[in-house]
Length: 302
Image (tube, rainbow, N blue to C red; front, side, top):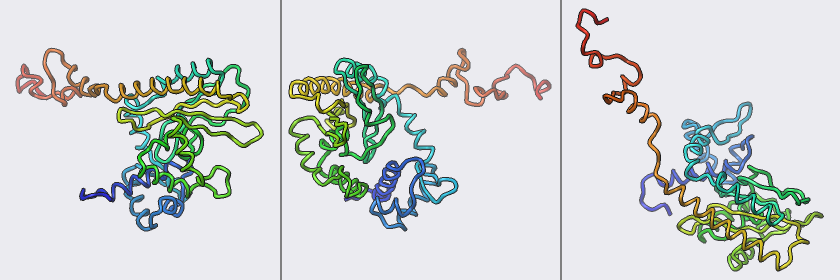
């Protein structure tokens, strides 16, 4: 499964635990909950979690036995924001969709086994309740936004996601994975995902995936509107606009990934500290050395 690469299995297990922890909110989860959801023996999970805690990728929640993602995870995300963050570029796209179509528009990005709601825009004419808040996480396959991404994953990866999320969903809940394969098939055939709520206020979500340069789904753009307002003619219009938006965001995503990395600011600080002559690190920090003061005689040095 992991080939002959030394340590690949340990890395894969650590990645699985990090993705498992990402599905829990800030209170975190117990060792038993983590090992059960990850389908990993407690002893193995405990050993790997201890190593991740030592590296600050995971932390213990104060006053409890729970684990949760650690502070370095946030720092990694901030470092890559300019490369992968679709939110700033997507905002005007979502605003146009909401205003022109009279819908609530959403942008979601894949986060492990979940779909993370990155942003949303509301129409001035919209009266229905909002089904998803910014930063909400839903299992991939629950809701149209996650279904649109799940359906385009490679078969082996999709099966792994479905197996994992089946362990999270209450079997008596209406939103189960019982018919997920059929939903995936319909989504692939249509080229978009469509899901409706069964509550008194019936709403329908329509979503189209955002693909990277390798046609791999990394995000999704979605429109939500009352089911009674969605006839065939309007469905065609909504899907067409969503596809235009998804294509635009795909280009933005690829442009961000291909953008050359800027040099670190600390390197600029060192190089520009003395315009007339390159300085060493000690001089840039204000540390005076003999080489920096060649005119001083030994008698004047302190």
